[in-house]
Amino acid sequence: MPVPPFRLPDLDLDLPICLTCGVQYGAERVDCPVCEDERQYVGWEGQRWTSLARLRAEGYHGVLRPEGERVTGVGAEPKISIGQRALLVQTDAGNILWDCVPFLDDDLGGRVAELGGVTAIAVSHPHFYGAMVDWSRAFGGAPIYVHAADAEWLGRPDGAVELWSGDALTIGAGLTLINGGVHFAGGTVLHWAQGEGGRGALFSGDILQVVLDRRWVSFMYSYPNYIPERPSVVRRALDLLEPFDFDAVYGAFWQTVVRADGRAAVRRSADRYLRFVADTP
Figure (cartoon, rainbow, N blue to C red):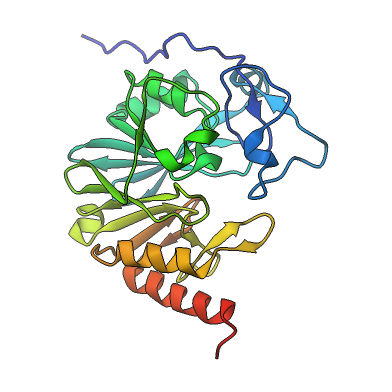
């Protein structure tokens, strides 16, 4: 019997999405608190909005590309907001959508369904909330893991959102969320012990930002406004990561991946960063 085509559930396609940061809100508003915070910025032309309906009408479409072993990038073209891509992490415990994007339609949802769908969603920080509630509803109300320290930034509260607290949370076999606290108090990374053929993978969003020289990462309180992260926060994050082995580090944007020796790259990067902020040789 042929498999029926994938169809999204009924979604409110007119909910506002901030054009600058890509965060969707549950009701119309005049401001975007995420952009008004000093870690982001209001667009130079003022606060502007779009919606899923408008993005579809303007010809935006979903993009899937391999980013690593059992890791598929999920994004949209043309570029929306800051251009991040999510990652579908295809584990034996189910598929985790790491971070989120502002776009979704039947075609993109169907292609993700062909890869096994989404068991759970985990988000690194508020800039990457995107349309996470719609993504959850597209896949049967998949739980959305958000650290409780960032609860104030939720623009669309929903029963699927599971606020967690503390330093770490296991969400499946070999899958651990770690609250490094860089960039945002709730800034979170995902460790997958079985990733990279058992060598381990770290999914960092821009909590640990994989930079253009992909042998390194960096640590910032605000990327667009160039505000460095506090050394005490960076040291705490390193301490929390110390027990975890990982070969690859997957950043927030297409092809921003440390492909090998990731654990040493993070340590080396932190040592360099801390030397510079302390103005030491």
